Amino acid sequence: MMRKRRNILKNMLNGRPGLVCPMDAMTQSSSLSYACSFGVTIFLIYQIILEQKFAIPYDGPVGLKMLIAVVSMLIYGMVFFPIFACLAIGSVFGYGISALYVWAITAVNIYKTFSCDVSVKTRIAVVLRALPLLGSLLYLSISIPGRFIKAVRKRQFFVVAESVLDNKQDLETIRKSPAGLHVIKLLEKPEPKSKPSPGICGKIKHIIRIFLKKTLYHWDKDFRYPSRFSSIMIVGIFLLYVLSFEFMTYVFRIFVLLDTLYETEIEKLGLDLGAGGSIYADSMHAIKISMFLSLSLACAIGLLMIVYMLSSYRANLKALFRGDHSVIPGIDARSNAAHMVGFIRYAGYQVGYIVWGFIIQSVIFLILTLAISTVSILSRYGMRDWFVKKISDLWPALLLTILLNIFQILLSKFFFLQDKGQRLRLDNRRLLYTFTYFMFFFNVFLGLVSCLLRILKSIVVGALFMSRLDISVLPQRFQFFDPGFAAYVGYLHVENAHTHPVMFVFIRLMKMNLNSEYRHSTTVDMEMKEIHNGVVSLGLNELANGNASKEKESQTTEQWRRRYAACFKWWLAYTLINNPELRFYRKGYMQVLKLARQEGVAIPVSDDLTIDIDAIKRKLNITESTHL
Image 1 (cartoon, one colour):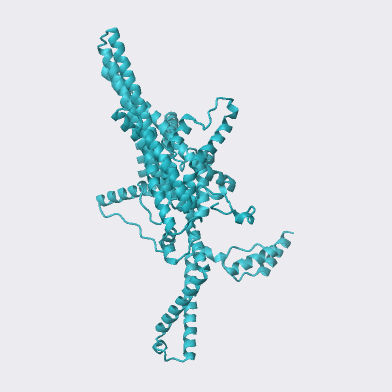
Image 2 (cartoon, helix red, strand yellow):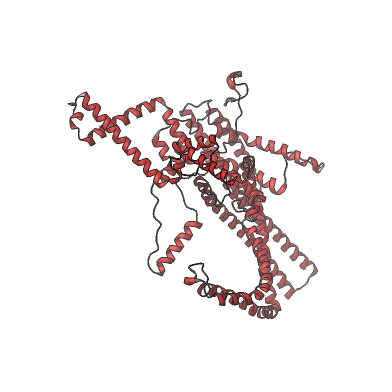
C-alpha cells in the first residue's frame, strides 16, 4: 500500500497496492544500512555456499533439486525482505515495522549466543564467531529507529520517500554533490604532473610516490560507490572473517583430538618411540603451523584483493565515463541483454568467487608451506646431504641460463638498438643476425622450460586473482568466456548508462529550471545583476543614480546585449578550436550531410560549410563516364 502501480490498472483503488522493491540497485544512499542488512544474511550465505543448505529438507531425485533451490531462494528472500523494504520505502510505517522486526531478530540471536552453558573460552569463541552478525543487527537496531524519528519530523507517515531527482533542486546542492564535484573537476584546468626532484634520492621518492598512488586506495570526494557494490564488498569481508574463524576452529579441534588419541594410545601400549616420537611431534607441529599460516595468508590476500577491487572499480567506471575502453570492452562488444544479465548476476558471482578464491588460495598455500616444512624436517633427520647434492648439480645450469638472459638484454640495449635502447632502430645488423642465428638452438632448449613456467605462472596468477572479477584469467580474445568477468563488464556498463555524473547533473539542472518559481526568481535576479554590471562597465553612473532617460536606458541594455553576444561568440570559437571534433556536429554540417544523403552523394568529412553538392555530383558523373 506504500507504492502506486505505474502501468496495470492505475485507476483501480487509486493505483494501490504497488510493487515494493527491496533495494534500488542504482542508489548511492544508505550504503552502510544496506551493507549491514546484507551482513545479517552472512551465515545463511555461508551455509548456502559450503553446505548447500535448502529451506526445505530434500533427499529425492537430483533432477528436482534445482526446483527446491528456487523455492528456497524465494523463502530466504522473504525472510529478510522487511529489512530491505523499509529502507527503500522510507516512511514512518515502514521504519516502525522494520524496527520491531530487527529488534526481534537481534533478541533471538543474542539469546542463542549467550544462552548456552559453556566455558568462558568457548563463550568468547562463540561471540567472536557471531561478531559480524551481531554488529550488523545492533547497527540496524539503532539506525532504523533513528530514521523513524527523522521520518516523523518530516511527516512522511505513509508516503514513499522522494529520490534525489524528485526533490526540489537548487544550484548549491548540485554543486556539492559527488556528481557536481565530478563535473566541476572536468571543467577545471588539470593539475600539472609533478616532476622528480634532481638527484637520485628525488627520483627514488618520485617512483615510490607514483607506486603508492597506483597501488594504495585513496579517498576521492567526487566519487561515491553505489550501495549495492559497497554491500557486496562488506559481505565479502564478513565472509572472509567467518571462513577464517570457522576453518581455524575446525583445524584446532582436529589437532587437539589427534594429540589426545596419540598420547592415549602410547600410554596404553607403553612404548618409548624415541627418535620416531620426535619426528611425529615435529611433523604435527609443522602441519599445524602450515595450516594456520595458509589460512592467515589466504585471508590477508582476500582482504587485499577487496581493497584493490574498490580502487579498480572506481578507475574502470571513471574510464567508461570518459569513453575510454582500453581496459573494459565497449558496450558494443556484447548485446544489451547480455550486459543486463551480467548486472543481475554480478553480486552473487562476486560473493561466490571471493569464497572459492579463499578456499583455493588456502589449499595452494598449504601445499607450499607443507613442502617447505617437509624439506626442513627431512634435512634435519639425515637428508641434508641429498638436498645439497641436488642443488649443487642444478645451480650451474640455472646460473648459466640467468647469465645468458642478462647478456641478451644488455646486447639488445647497448649494441643492437640505437641511442642505448631509446629508439626501436637496429644497429650493428651483422652482429645481430649472427647472434640471433646461434641463439636459436639454445632458445629451443630454453623454450621447453619456458613452457612449464608459463603453465605455472597461469596457475599462480589465476589462483591469486580468483576473487577479482575485474581481471579476466583468460586471454583478451576469450575474456568473455570467463563468466565472472562478463558479469563485471555488464554491471559496469549498466551503471555507466544510468549513473553517469554529467548526465545526472544535466537532468538535475533541467529539473531545477522547470521549477517555475525558481526559474522566475532566478531569471529576474540574474537579469538585474547582469544589467547592473553592464551599466557599471559602460561607465553610466547617471543611470545607476536614476537620472538617465528611458532612451539612454534602452541604449545601455542594447549595448550590454551586444557585448554578451560577442563574448558568447568568443567562447564558441575557443571551444571549437580546442575541440575540433565538435565542428562536425554543428547545424550547418548536419544540414549539408542530410541533403547529401537525400541526393545519394558521399561528401568528405570536413567542417567546411561551403560544400557544393552539385559540383560533387558533376565530378562523380564525369568519373563514371570516363570509366565507361
